[in-house]
Image (tube, rainbow, N blue to C red; front, top):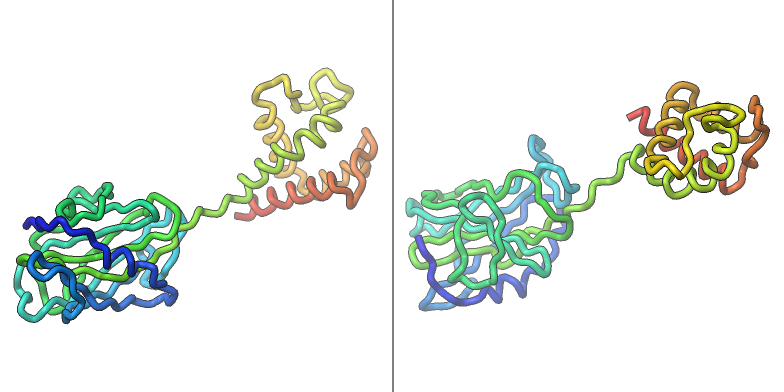
Length: 276
């Protein structure tokens, strides 16, 4: 089934700013577009849109990148169209980019012209209430996605003039990743390389496995030394050593100082990682 109009979906895009704040199915009255009549909204067609995480019936309006989501729509067509075959369309507007889902299940660029619009499902027989899968899987980009659904039957396109808005956010960094970042930016240059390395290095007074910045992999190697020591002896052991308790090298940090607090935060992240 082809829909050969060259009109742009101006109504669809200009009314897309309506928010979807409530976590419940979004009930949308449809709009109709035909070559003879153009776009109008006096139609009995309606849509119900909803999103959940895969395997969970709880409705959501946000997810994190990498989550597997399930977006479904219930289509209620005109009575006269029940029993007719229809093609289902899906448009994702992630400003400023418009994309449509094709029959291969991929999202491809769309310029807003009906002439270029293609369905992702073809030949579905319309029922009084037709439940269809809009999308299942991982949305591959963060941001505020505005999902539009429609169907083509005979010479008419029925579509949702307002969007189902879905916020896809970056997944929070793990405690271990945060610990590595803090080690690289603060612990390594200010504590390890200026204090610990004086003695705790091969050929030093107290040979250990710490390495200097001359080793291109010094950040990872030294982080692993701290991570292993933490796993074996714990946070308090390292903090006590840093202020001179049971430490042959004496106090290197002052309790309550910025350096000490940074070390405490770093070790706290390792604690969180160990408990996950």
